[in-house]
Amino acid sequence: MSNPYYKDYADFLAERFDGKVQKITVNAGFTCPNRDGTLGRGGCSYCNNRSFSPTTGVATQSISQQIIDGKRFFRKKYPEMRYLAYFQSYTNTYGEVERLLALYKEALADDEVVGLIIGTRPDCMPNELLTRLAELNKFKPIIIEYGAESSHNSTLAAVNRCHDWGTTVDAVMRTHNAGLTVGLHFILGLPGENREMMMQTVDRLSQLPIDCVKFHQLQIIKGTQLAADYMSGKLNIHLFEVDEYILLCADIVSHIRPDIAIERFVSQSPDNLLIAPRWGLKNYEFTHRLFNALALK
Ligand code: SF4
Image (cartoon, rainbow, N blue to C red; front, side, top):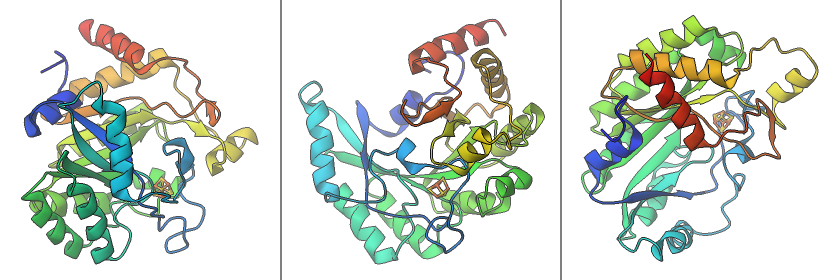
């Protein structure tokens, strides 16, 4: 292990790829069924997709050109670097299967792209697509990341996710059974959740055949329903102080099944979009403080 406390993302990558691997985020211009009216229009109450993607649902360049541009950034310094094409923004399995396959194959056609990461919702993974992804997975690893956000149906309803925990469990099982690598994403501190509920989620995710997990603190982002409720004083919410959050993360490390890689605990939305909490902490500073807390456990 590259850190002595838990399996981290570097360990996860080293198990699957030789040498240095870097993600390149690509935008295929997808939308989301919770925004286009299929499931809902407003989206999840915390979501402003601009906070994690500089482009919003519009692909201005082909996938292959985005990869060429991404590689240019790293190539000079690390000529031996290999890449994972990361379909991140919105719902990257939401579309007609042949069109989706064409986009994934365009990314995989680059010799220096050694695998794909596909971010999506758990209710957007039809068996037909899984079968086709399992075929691609024989050539280059395919990693599916589902936004689960919570294991509590009351929370999922409160933030307008428009799916329940059972849907996440079903998607994880089908994806794992298809032979693909599976990751889940969770937000810590969603409205109505106390610490006990968050730890229940950690216990529940530990019972699933997942390979990796991402956590991050709830952030109030401009342009979201959550921000409107927060600013109007309607939102009864507890935003973490950083020290309190670090103790929670240390407890998660103690509880989570140890073979699950933890990719991250924090997220940093762009300064111009973030309302709260404003910790002013770089990721490496957070990790340093978390390791100190784990050393004292
Ligand atoms: S968080 Fe994901 S599922 Fe929810 S509205 Fe945003 S893009 Fe859609």
